[in-house]
Image 1 (tube, helix red, strand yellow):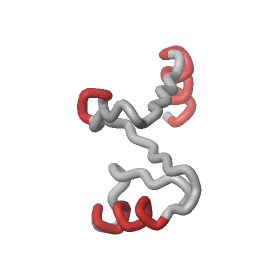
Image 2 (cartoon, rainbow, N blue to C red):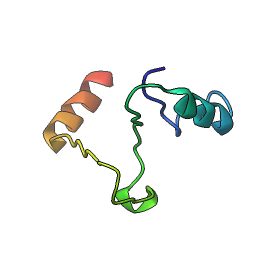
Image 3 (tube, one colour):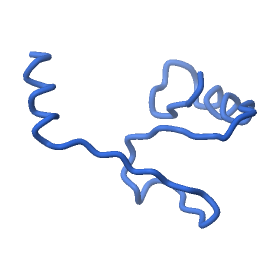
Length: 64
């Protein structure tokens, strides 16, 4: 509830928009979209967090 994730669609996308609009703290969302698919505005701060590919491989290995 703290940070909406628009791509995780259990409810309609409009519900995610309403949730984001209702936030009273500093707004942030998480996304797995490529940067060129996210609207860019100079007044917004963007934070990119990536994972080391070796971590991804071992995480996938542990799930299987």
